[in-house]
Length: 250
Image (tube, rainbow, N blue to C red; front, side, top):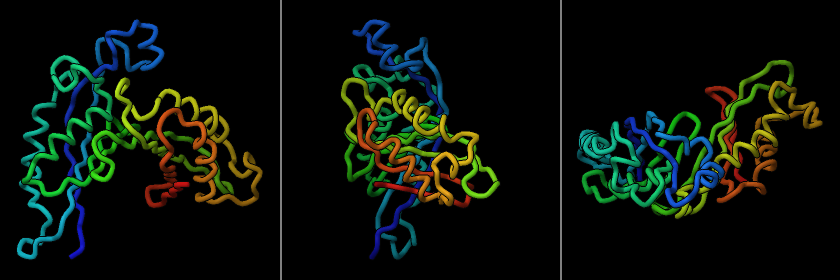
């Protein structure tokens, strides 16, 4: 019988700060940027939990959603409205980055027999940043996705506001708790993509008389792939409208 995946979402609110006490202020600011600013900043986190398994022929379900919801609510109660740095012992010796928070949540869910086989979790810090951990990669490896937006004409005369999701995959750095330097990725995208594309006719910018969304996704990939600071570029997802998405993974 084929395996079916089931995804459940749950929200919670918490605060955190990126800081290594043994570093001086200059180094903390250089590495963590605005995330270092005291005292802390909060997020409305969205956790997506995906379990996988065969459909039970009696119930028609992979897992009873009531059981999955109960487990998630019990787990999230420990994290909701907490300061990760001050209130959560999991982060006494690790920085509460999205990757490290996802890793802690993974370890807690993996031991829950009531939810079947844990396949993947994705933790959205906000609409612009998420971290994903999978059973295939294990808890020490993550994919981090960052969203960027620009408005431009692809072909003809109608402009679109494009959402570009850049995903970087790799081991979670044991010192800084991140897969890649998000600040460096922001600067790379700003200089290599956004400054050139925003409010422009993309065919003219790229010197192409006809340009498709597929080609544009590859162009962005080529601008970024060899310059990522930490990790490996995994994919570029380009959202033209709610109904049209292009993806490129070189």
